[in-house]
Image (cartoon, rainbow, N blue to C red; front, side):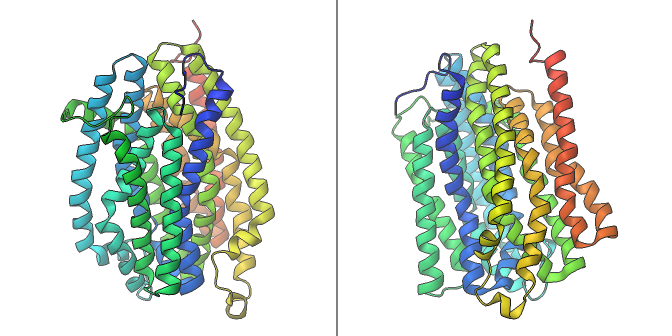
Length: 449
């Protein structure tokens, strides 16, 4: 791929050159969880689907651990590359990689031995407990793969290799699809085999990316060094996006417990479908933010603040338009999307499950209209090292307001109150984002001098 000139290329063209490969890569990444839901739901039924829905908060925790280092480190690496300090960028990359590898190996083993306790804490019923345990035990042992794959993907993008990142995600995703089908439908190995297929798919993608860095084909590659100060700096810069995933996990945990009390395992199954379908619009909106991040970080490092402001404005407009489009599409195609995750005979056993899920989706997905604006704002401020502004926005749209609403609305509106908590929380968070943007434009880093 021809190297991109981040200092001079037109913003829309530059944004699309990052957004489109990132979009394809993120959609491929999203299929890991989505395919698990589709194959498990179709083959093993709604209880198995609810079980992996119960297990879902584990993934944001693992991703949060990865983002704590990788997002901040990638922004730092891009910043140093923009300043012509490639060796410093390699120190940051190498330190973060070695630390993430060692700690995720140890952490996965510890989680494995507490799988039953964690499943109960996540809200599993006695009926679902064996299914949750079988699925999560495999995930824990391969946690290092789930952490390293997206980490290397982010660094490849910041090493001006978005196409390579895309290819790695696509190949790994296709492997996951094929292996899920073989394990579940041909060999009939059960729910644990779906988790194994996920790990093997991630492993293939990880190896594709790892060879790029080991063979020193770009500006970033692994060197024999470890700098604790680089690690701590990356951690500081990565706090906003890491807290985002932790907040998502906490929100899912609270939603799961609240729904279980109100609507039981059936309600959990409906919420699981919303989560699986919601992966698609979420990853599209996240890709828009990732299209902004490398450009903003590089130009901030180069001192080109006018280009930094322009890419941010472009990202805000693009993400808002994208949010409206995505809601319209999910509204129109919701019956078809929901049917992917439910057994073919569900209408005979629960005639209203499909319509109840569709009604819940209409309201829940209203939150995606404004979600992109919040994600772009949070990742933009993180990319130019405005950690506190990024953290406030992130905390607002992932947890703060949704948590406030979910503590109040279910008492008045039951299950529908839980569903409405998310879009209302996103709306309130958007006001916070606009307030921070206004402050940064008038008195902060985006001020015109």
